[in-house]
Image (tube, rainbow, N blue to C red; front, side, top):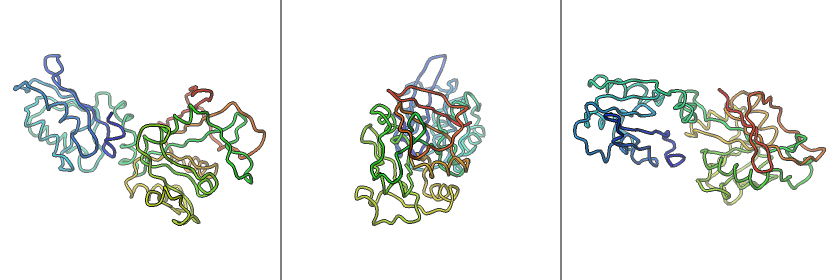
Length: 307
């Protein structure tokens, strides 16, 4: 699979077609390896590609990074037409690939299934266009809308079912970083890993003014970052500077409410269990008018993706 091994590169797919026959197809490999265009063209035996069309979900790169420019390969192969879903917002590309191909006589069309292509790489586009990570807010609540038992109790309440917990760990593997507040970190001692799913662990981020490096769990030493920003905007600016393209927020009510109030979030994933506890820590205030509802084992998932 392209994701998440390709990150921070976007997911890109390419298909080469001639006379209504597919000659080659491919997708971007692990970061630093071949791009989609290279994979699609590597085993093509056809010599004359002047009447062939290359379909690609993102503008071909025009710069030297960890791999050579894909536009050079396209021109070398003599491909006559390239159809691109959407322009690449990365400053090193951002229209340059399209311009170079057109200057060399290649017919280029842009915009086929653009909405779908942008959604697929919504983390990448948010990072480069909004200059912040793509933010996903996640919390689990009881049926009567509590996210934990009374604050003075030491042990946290287990709300999510085994099935929904597996979903959450799969979500963690899809994002570059995971965030909790200092209070949640001290009380719950969360693992913040993907032990219930296959995939890389996200980078732990603790938002706190008082937590120190010495307070981190041993398994997070050298991996976690403590950020003491005064606002959500300041926090996201620091993460942007660190190259974090996506962030899963699993903090307590205060942290989640701060993101909701700021408006700097892109998805909400709220898991509701059947249990009721009568009192405890109230869940964040969220108007779920645009959410889609799924059953996740015995729990219900309300999932909103903001447009």
